[in-house]
Image (tube, rainbow, N blue to C red; front, side, top):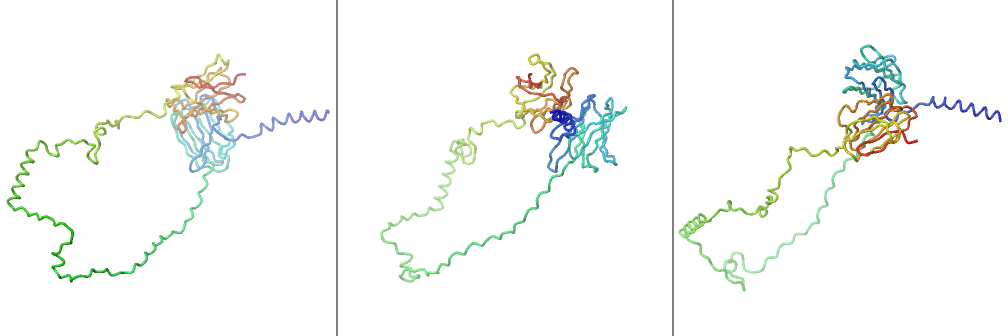
Length: 367
């Protein structure tokens, strides 16, 4: 019995050590650092040419950025002139194929970000800078090449079958007199048919008289055919009167936006009803839906479908007040017609979400 008790105690002591050594895998946006109003978020992105590991660095002021590679061992360096942190630090990245850890270096005139690579070779990378933000994209795995297309032999069109031969039959001529007999061909009349009356052609004088009378009649007519206003529906190939009078829409006028739901701001408040710190995401109208998922132990993601950000400043990290326990940072971005809100929390904090009018509340579940 005593031996069993000692075995249970030893197992309990070893379990936390084993769990601490387990590496987390990169499965979504994860916050590596959020201090001194500088945030570092790592994420994975799929593109047509392969899978990328994306590093997003956000600072509170506009900066001048320089990026370069250092060898032995290879590492990517970003210098952000105009930004700073109080002290240097290193932050391990979740398991991925490119980034091992990210180091923030404190310098008097700049912030240096060093990306230590997981392999001994430099990946294909690119970077772009925005308003107070740097995005570094590093190729993790190229896309698999497409299999070569198998060329099918070209089929020649088959000739249509020849029609069956029809034997030539000489036409039977009626028996009768020879073709040159004028009495039977030209002058003979078939029996039983009435003889058509013979109409004599008018003389030239009569024709001239008829033409002058026709001109007089046309001149005396009240309106010509071109002046006659026949209904447009009677004229083939034209629009009817109703269609001609209908007003076409103004091509220069802008159609209303199909997606008018916008996120206009964030508020950090202590809810009196739930007695807990609450993040309130404010929208310009009600009727929103929110889908929240847990990325890892310190990151949650909320997707607001069919929405956008009201202004570009909302992509910058939002930091709660010092007495707002549990929450570290909130950051938003527009993705495929929706807004994704990434929330960094202290490890062990659970969150739930609810829609209240034109607000989305994010808070710990009720005890």
